[in-house]
Length: 407
Image (cartoon, rainbow, N blue to C red; front, top):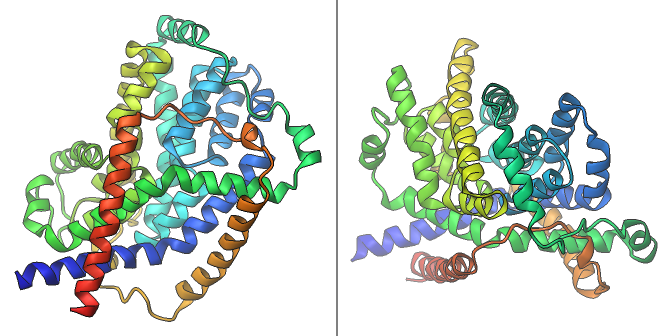
């Protein structure tokens, strides 16, 4: 019993430490994301994309890069630009960029995993887009694309572009109040995922033995970096399975990705895990609602194929250049989380900025909801379950911290 209490306290402390390490990065990332989404509207994106496939793919990737990292917002944005005439290729470029190339994700990855994974994330995001483009050109699924557009034509049109009143609104509203509203919405979208993801990471770090990872990921183990091709391929295939079981968004999964790498999972396997936020069942179901099941399964095939190719290319490319990261560089479990260093001062500064934005969001209560990005239809049941799990996580964390410091 004493061992369990000690581990419980350590797991809760580890989770809060992980979040403290990442807090300033979350705030900075979501402030940047909120500002861009307010000042660069969806209507402007659609107007700029045009008809040329090459240009529209580049612009789709760019607009994805400056958008929200939330998968559900990305799915809705992808549907919107596709419905309004963007090519299927540029729509996929937008989807992949908005979940893999966003600024806030790179900041979080740099904190937990190091610069090699940041480079891998951004280079990999580009490779995912290029592989999907190549597969679409080879397969040329014209009938599927036509049917997907018809499926969207049949849906209600009340999800019109929320940026249509942009010019009127900017004359009536304080722009920073709008950014504050968007910032608040960003946190509302991700707080459950972040809570559950970081709590799982703390629990895994303390309770799950290394032998489990060595069984799940063949030949993994601390200090082992020599993998055969088949072992790397197995890690890549198991990575999405692990992501599917946690079903947490990419931002919440990063500390768990760091733990996997620290436990000896290959670079390719960890990158596949990070890239897997679009191959989980909730995303499959939402795409089916938008485009029909055939197109949804085709998108799953595209993304999974691109994920495998990208993870392999990154692993062997980094190996060739001598850039493969060393698992020993990830020591987040052994960190002294709350010492007085740059993280402490950055957290204080960004908490102050966050407090000011919260003040604007609560006290500037004019109607700006119509200007905010559309969200994909989340499952009410799943969201309710996730909310209750998040509350259980808070109870777990509070109890663990009490056990660690007061008992």
